[in-house]
Image (spheres, rainbow, N blue to C red):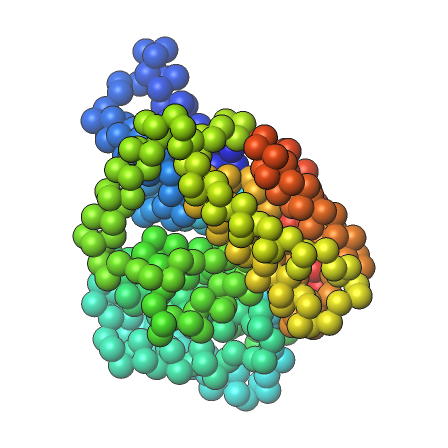
Length: 385
């Protein structure tokens, strides 16, 4: 899975292996919980849906349980973003400099609404949620990477998610407000990753509709994409997945309809579609980061995102992660945030992505992109807000 770039799946498999190893050594009894975790993982792998592997709440719950079976303290729950954003850089999120009186007023309103939510976290009053939404809208500054802009999308995502209480996350937001009143201008990276993963979760699993355009643009600003479509419920999504898995299995049984790209076996027709996407996008990925205008950077980001989505659909996880990181770098340039290193890491990442696409077009496995992705990711995460 490491070679394929299925990094969320790799972490899950490592957790399974840790429990199985202790069971084989007689130190742990293999439970029905473990068998169910293995069964669900096997089905997820068979569906070859990289977004599901990363963002499935079911798989995350299994992962957390496996860690506890292997000896992790019960109080140390595995953050959702450990799987959801594995291998993905997340740029800094900012806090605007607002007048002290305004911040004090907004924090008081936030705390009052938060108390109402805490009294009934399973069914928060609609008025309290509306008040929180209004607070977040008032706190958000003009920066595309303002944290409260992301937080507002997260609040809306949590309201629509079943079985998810926003209590703990909202309480952390109150602490951020206190830090902002004390002069903080950047949010802790761990909270940004958590918030972003929660925004992405349902979109990654079920796709986006036309009314979600603003949230999709926000996710694009942070290096994430979604499919447009999609199923109106989890049940309809499961039916869609079953049909897709059946079609994939039928295609894989026909040797003439498959291609082998290193450790990944891909559908031949999907491979041809991927090549068309890559060919149409290649020209947009040749610009110099320090010498392009916002329009050129926007087209480069869109091209890289197209490649990333197509690579993920094919199961080429390393290429997909590299393309999304490259897209994030170009996307930041469109917002007037050029790379601190003059674009060296982004240029190297774009070159590595193009080299991988040439390899795939030749019918061979793409090169190991981990080092190039890590270098670009480090540059993006260390960027000045």
